[in-house]
Length: 361
Ligand code: PMP
Image (tube, rainbow, N blue to C red; front, side, top):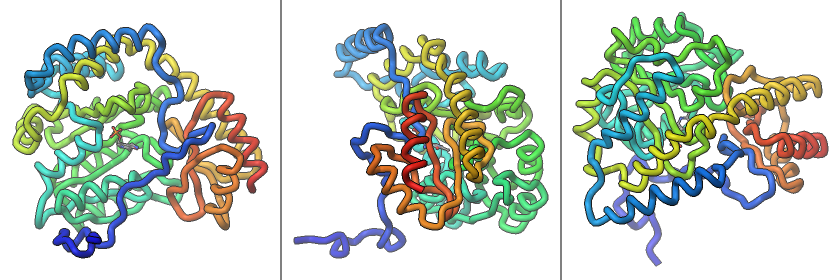
């Protein structure tokens, strides 16, 4: 039998493990920051009709540049964040993971580097490596925020071609203010990516980096329909940036990367954005209640502007994780070694989480 070791795999990938958040069929799944609220029967019907219409055209390639979808996404961002974007400044791909890959293919590459502030989203370094780009670890402060002085120091020392900032940050939930982002933009010699996958969950008063786009052509803000939009299964991520950035991405994207079906599903979901985003406020409330409960129980808890909460500290988090799983509740072992992350679910799911945690510590 052939094993992987027998194949001429890239040397730098030997021994690597594939991305693998457990996908287990348990009653309460709170481990991948999905939205617990699925589409309504009306939306399911509309999606069915949109897919049926798209099906009749599947002999043809999709609109390669997804112009109608990009215009809809721009209109959505303008309504959500008060920006003035149009399709020339918004780009879409299969999940924001593919968006990040395209950014690195265009602005990273052999001999180049990307820098991020850990703990943060583990796929940033992984995608960076896949794109043959060097990775530099810088660090967040004790409270998981970004210290502007230390960030400036790290960027000045390493002069990375791409800087990743994640706000709200995964897995800590920490949001960045404009001051920190501006400080990075001032010194970064290359592109600055603000990953706002959880942007819609930010607290009232927390600004979006989208507001900084005018006058900053090296800033890219990435978003996704996987989280607040409750559309993880459709795989639709997007970014807002200067039109010149989109010109660069056109050089690396695969032709027809976004299927006709994906474009139709995403446009239909955007037409129902009121419904899909209707639960964001409820999830924010449930998040704040979860933080308060965990603190009352004596845990350390990171402030969260996202739909998840990082808490600790556990001498043996793997054992607690397994005991919670025995109670039918799946959370995530991620972040600093003594912490774990729980995604905010429905009130019933969070009650199950609280009970399972009490039984498991
Ligand atoms: N960025 C961050 C910070 C994330 O947490 C995730 C998903 N966990 C993504 C990007 C990718 O999401 P998607 O590919 O579903 O858009």
